[in-house]
Image 1: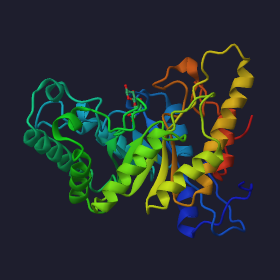
Image 2 (image 1 turned 60 degrees about the vertical axis):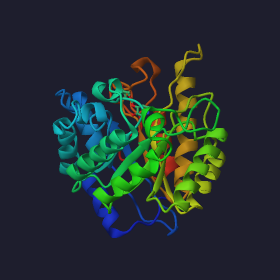
Image 3 (image 1 turned 120 degrees about the horizontal axis):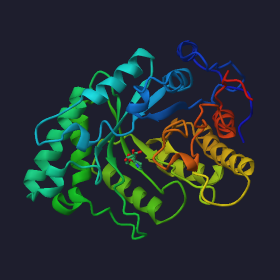
Length: 349
Ligand code: XIL
């Protein structure tokens, strides 16, 4: 188990933490321990809503941002060959102004595709060209500001088959679309860390095995791939223990990859259990996952999919995130920070 003492950090990291304001890291005795970067997905309309609590919490607590929708293909390339980066640029500007990292999400996925793409009928050659041009243009646009990309999102089928998801790219191009995408992203920015990002691989099962097979195939073909993203959309009755997640992550890090938790949230569900008990149970889930990332040295970050229950894809009533809808920190927030080894000056109520 991880101890309470925060680890020794390089001076540069302490300096960055000081800039972040509300987070304070202190030196401790364990030079090998590491502190994952804390991140959140950002809802641009909330960021620009004029409610200062949204931006203030984000900039004082988080060090990494993921645009929730603005970098997806339907937003970025609404018509073939016409790219619109303006909304994503505004998130990147906010991140830069506050010294935060940006995770690019996502280049190639079977969902949130533009209508022109979904409704067209394409040959394999045409779709390969579209895939490469999209990646080339988006990665190049953000070359100076986005150094990690979810190149392929959710490639594994979620039906228990252990096959690749039969999305548009797979149906038309075949399984080679994944290597094609990773190679195109690498060419467009050789310095970027390239991710495969997946859900329901946070617990043992056929999907983990399928993802491992995919990664081994890609490695054998010398395809550039650096990181596996564990989305961690978990539930109170479906989540990994620290031990389970640690073991899964290490199966990937042993292949030379790094890992991150990329979209963590824990909805409360629909039980009649009293709210304070549900919030305590939720905090325990956050702690299990935070500890796993803390313990796996190659786990570089923990990003929640949003940060306030006021803005979540699961619905505010599910209260899945570390801050309540009124921006007060919940038990989950303190549990996550403690487990991940991050000290916060946000006062505990
Ligand atoms: C979700 C967003 O949160 C929603 O606002 C949007 O309508 C649909 O997509 N896995 C992913 C994310 O990789 O991109 C998804 O985000 C949530 C599931």
